[in-house]
Image (cartoon, rainbow, N blue to C red; front, side, top):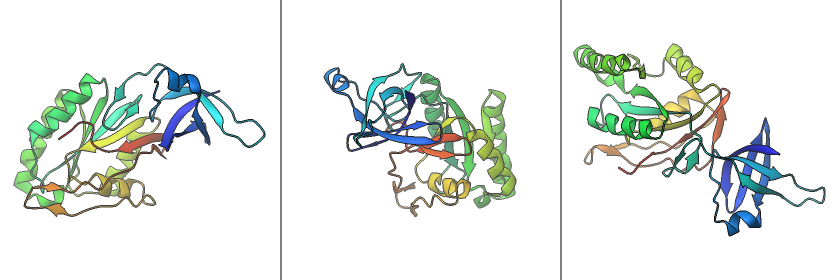
Length: 224
């Protein structure tokens, strides 16, 4: 059988086949070949026998792409979260994320948070900057007021049928945005450290989550 790895847990691999999730462990030949499956891998596995034992993951299929941080394969797109303020908006940091993703052949979707902290003049300046990213082909979500129903619905449609990484500037509100997109998720959030002008890392999940017809994961995609 074939499926997609959605969770690694203490040597076990949870594999999604349609709406079913099947727990397996790696076959001995994978360990001998030093093949390490990661989340997002499409794999072949032998189902569990009727005696209650686990099935075996036997083969990792070729990857379209693979990230190291976090370790996840076959990513379709990355939602790059950047704050309009607190921490300060920086095009150079946003560009670093976008260049890295382009090198991995992963589409970037720019989402700007905390726009309510800007006055109209500052928001207009930011809008002009974001217009430049749209002109070169990036999809940009720049709501005047965060978490409006229409904007959240637009973001949910972006997730449909795709494996999405949520990444971006630390302290930009990735977990807060996800809690609005998927209200029953309740990811931990943390206050901004004003003295360092960056947030405290709180996202520690190592699982792919299903939402709105796709899979997604949140974390940095390269070291700060």
